[in-house]
Length: 417
Image (cartoon, rainbow, N blue to C red):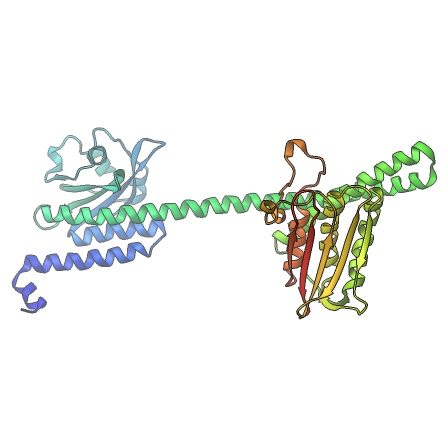
């Protein structure tokens, strides 16, 4: 016998099939809905329709108040219900929550746990109730209630059906709450990150003016004085120049992270640009009596890059080479054509990098040294900035080293196209 004819000859079977279809539809919809408010409204509306009752409500446990709160309801004033905490003791919903067992009450007026004042307050008078716990594994998170069966009394079949709805609903609510919590956490992190970026940007901007004055006076004093005074002026100037470099790094990092750094590519002779980068670091290298040696081909290599941004990247790498190399050592700055690309390298004779740290050195604020025994200084953002400026122009940068104490080579690959 076909399903339609079978269901027509057996009303109970027809009702069961109808409920099963609605439960399948509900399950599909619940799994595709992540908005908690929409989810709750769908659950109580579907429960009331399937069980053919006047109203349905859903209460969730609030740890801070140690009570159940109406999260969604039909049949009464939902806003008024939301203001009423339902105690875990001496209440129908509280009993269901504490025992984690279904509860059927055919005549609420005869049950002392029914609060008639609440019914009067919200403008809805329930006379019968079927309630089931909302559970995630063995953890009860709330209660789902069906109120006032329209035709007859709540049956065992109703209890099973509401239990199935509650099982699907509990999982969906839990998942939606997790997503909501994740979005809120991400928003907080984004706000904190924006605050940090704003602070760094303002700090670097506001400090430039007084720092410029210090550099100007220190330069003037060093030129006009002699002996010990001139040496003191040089110390002040060197410290101020280091501070200016840090401020530039902070500003570059902020712009890179905020996506505000603009690039203006132009055809440049890469050898000349590398020489300019070396010139910016030469004074710092001379203090340590280090030599910067060029290893360039005779033919000019022309490539399209943002010259200023590329120089900033190379300068940051050179800063590291100078900082981590001993006095009177050599730093090689080279370039050659390789597979339709320009391969640049900065090779030093410094402290080297262990294999475990080769990948980490480009991480923001990463320090090779132990923070408690630092000798070389730095904020740990120079290579992060260099990587960002190079990758934004289609290039790649990586580090090579034979191990600690054996120097390091930073390589940059830039496609000609």
